[in-house]
Length: 525
Image 1 (cartoon, rainbow, N blue to C red):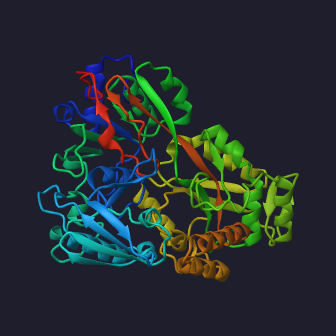
Image 2: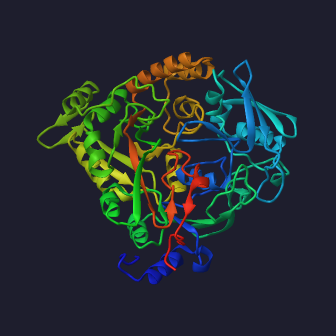
Image 3: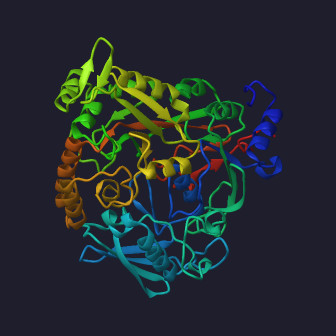
């Protein structure tokens, strides 16, 4: 355990660096960034979580970027673009100065290679992009599946990162390839080394359209929020990506720190295993949603945010808001359970099924949610009000969690967070053949609406279908949709400026504007 912030700065810095596996000399002068978890891969094709997304934002660029302040599209690898009258063909002209970190020029063939690789391996991408073709070394045409009314609408789904074709002579890309740990991109930083849970990056001076002002970054990961809180108070971190809600007041009292909030676009859910004895019953699922006091759980353990009624964050522009957020209704929940054949023994506080067996559920929790232990306790207590025993299982890491969930047995519920992807991720989650439909959900009406969504040719038709889908999902409750949250970050304003210029989904998209001032590197010298 790292000591409190009153410990001597040099001693605390050495302890933090040694624990994380980075030699102090390697990190001197770098912006040290605190993360909850180290990314499992550095390949942007396989962004399993926001840790991968954030790391690959630093290493890779797409064809275009987005300015959060004015919502305008900005050049990255592409210097210009246009949407054809058919609303589906987007022509990109690449910047002739663009190179990869190894000095190789970026060409239209790299874009075509990336699109073909993503279509081959990512079902959601096939629901967005039909093809890409090079018309000359610096020009590529990307064909969309669905018509868009304007170029900005078309570009919203084309934020994918460009991969170097020359690194994959056999044309095969897999999560286990060496590239996933030793990537070559075009982004603002390039990889120096990865040691343990720490990733050291240095500025890519040849980047277009502009290099960053920061010289280097070290991503430092620990699942212990107290270590990161103490480290940023002692100026041994320059930036803490996710401040725990309970620590906001304490860190705001530190004069050197700037704590700022932003709306996160991910959302929490309680997934129901549709193969389960109880959770496969629609009335049982609806009763679970009605029984929970979601506002109280969020306010007690997660801070500011909103309770949601569908697979979108409250502030997501794609959210049709067709169904209001749920409110607790314990009496209604008990009525639903009675209708489904369950009996609640109020004296013993036990729920029994048709065979008079007590109802017991197992919930598997997505890592790294260990910082909210009180949430599990209160969630268990709310289930107990219905007479249900809830057993909580916490896998040690994300790959273990994925393996357990994909088995489809041994659990009834999954508590987790979903990171929205560009394009139509809904099909993957809720279609009976969806690639990420791990809970065995099947509903022919939902399948038809998802297929209609993919065929929509106008914004109004898309929104109408989306609203109908929201109502269907709410009625069927494949998940109990929980919350989208306000998030907080903190940085040392004595040494950095403009760090609050972030994007809730593409966190480091404005890193070019960040300044290092006052001779600091996020650590004592």
